[in-house]
Image (tube, rainbow, N blue to C red; front, side, top):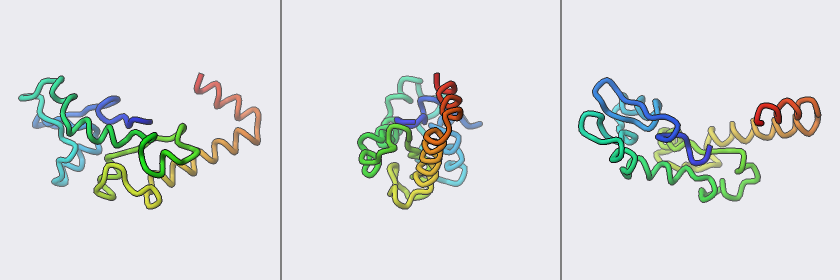
Length: 132
């Protein structure tokens, strides 16, 4: 989705009260990288967690309409971005899309779905029922 669901669709906290934008962000912290730790439930208010730069920066970089290569892609309306994945694999919230397994996988899936819908009216009807 765009923006990414981190912090919006999910926030997780660890046994020590640290709050993360996603479980993947929490797992990175377990490996020593607390990039996605936005605070602690014992010391920070919910408002402060949501207004922190550690929350807003990766969220901003997940807006595909302004991300290089995403904004020019014909599949952009159907896609999204994963700043945690790109940071974990490329040390950058945006990532280089041409080198991104996330981008490659999503592109292939979306193209396959479009082809299936073009070639089979029954499948198209099923997909439309799912989204309505």
